[in-house]
Amino acid sequence: MAEHAVAGPPTGPSGADPFSKRVRFHGQDLGYRRLAVLDAGCGLAPPLDLGRLAAQVVGVETDEPGPRERALGRTDLAELHLGDLRTVPLGQRCFDIVHASFVIERIGHAELVLDRLVAALRPGGLLLLRSHDRDSRYGVLDRALPEALRARLPWPRPTGRRGAGDRTTWTEWAAEFGVLGRGGRPRTGRDDGYVATPTSAKPEPQAPQQGPGAGDGARPPDRGPAVYEPVVSLNGVRAYAIVRDLDIIDQHSSRYPLPVPGLAARLAAALGRGTDRAGNRIADEFTLVLRKREKRDARVL
Image (cartoon, rainbow, N blue to C red; front, side, top):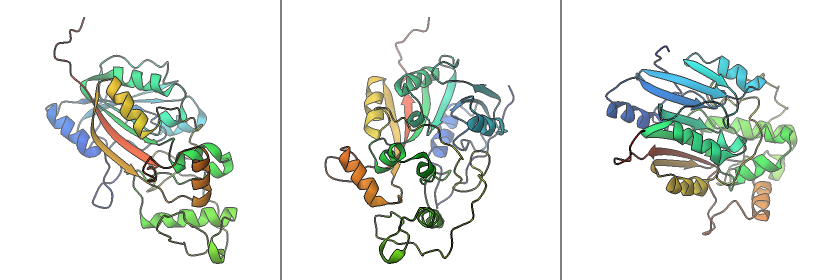
């Protein structure tokens, strides 16, 4: 397999990739040898930022038209396997890093898939996991909205963070579907009361950008089904990590400025979700770096 030095999403003070620092530290710990990387769901999320590290990146994606075409368009993959993550061959203890962004929320038998991803990790390897939380307002909307509206929910920037430039997205969403706030102004869904500047005309539709990470804040044309099994939450993954002997070494979370926040809050409240026991709003997205424990007394047969 060919070696690749992969350039991922831009990093910097305005929003660094939460995985890049951990990946580089892990590469240093391994003596800068060539990393074996598995990218699960490689047709949806942007590639990892591996900096100058040499790596063999193996991608796995479903054999569906949209994800398949985006995965085939990636130039950093040494191998690409098309198939179901529940059955596609992954191997045992053969990867230093496994990356899965926005994957477990859109598949059935998510815990089985996590088991297979962990089994593919070498002892001491890193599982880089990013997902929306099923118990958050975003997770409720993602499952409850019709497909036409769901496709226009905010999609994470390649770095997993959001900036002021994204306000146009909420304005366009409100203008297109007539979701208006006081005074006929489109609402952004921000918790701080910000109201976007109204638009004078409906925005012209734009062709979807092709390829993962095509432009800052790009949203894929399709996201797959909204399944959200019980493990797909921050608390669910924490419990999973305890049972599977995984150490959480880094954690980030973020809340999105959602369209129609009142609707999101009511739906979440009706389902008993959206807030924790203290009444605080649950983060819409969580990012975890988990390390597979090295069992010093284990024997490999």
